[in-house]
Amino acid sequence: MTSQEIVEEFQQLEQKLATLSARAEEEESTYSELEGQVHELNEKLVLTRREVADLKRLLMEKRAEFIKAEYDVAFQAREEAAARLAEAISQVLAELDLYAQAQQALAALHGGPDARAEPELATQSWERLVNAVGQRINELFEDELVETASRSQRPSAIRELPEHLREAARERTRARRRSRFSA
Image 1: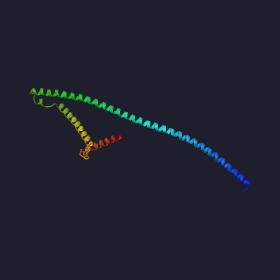
Image 2: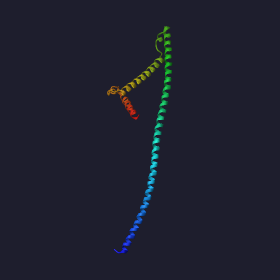
Image 3: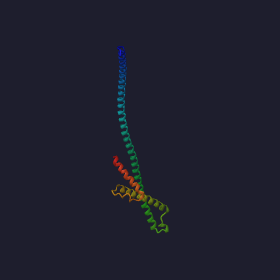
Image 4: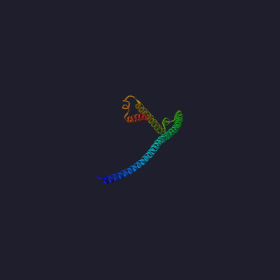
């Protein structure tokens, strides 16, 4: 190899070194910019995740407030209905006493066969009242049976219920378990 060829090869290598060095500087600069962007995105991501957590917490609080408000409205409606029902029952009992007194007064006058017969209007009303009260008593009794069976430690308690109450008792048991785990 001649000295001229060595010089040319040397110059080519120097040129290649300069090109690669420039490219390395450019890539280093790009890398630094990307690192800055990654750092900036990471900070934004942390803030966004914090906002998401805050909003989830707020949403849960609002959902709880909404459920409580619904409960309060339903509770108040039930209390008002109970007060009206109590008043109506008192009125019915007072009217029942007046009706009994009127029946006794009529019977005391030795009225004809109509004196002992119940008026049709009263008979129909009695039937409606007896049916409504009987249905309510049955509902309360069935609810008590379901509650007792769902709380029982005996595995056969639910199977011993009438068939139409078994699923309600199973659902109440599941709901109680879910509430224990979610609390």
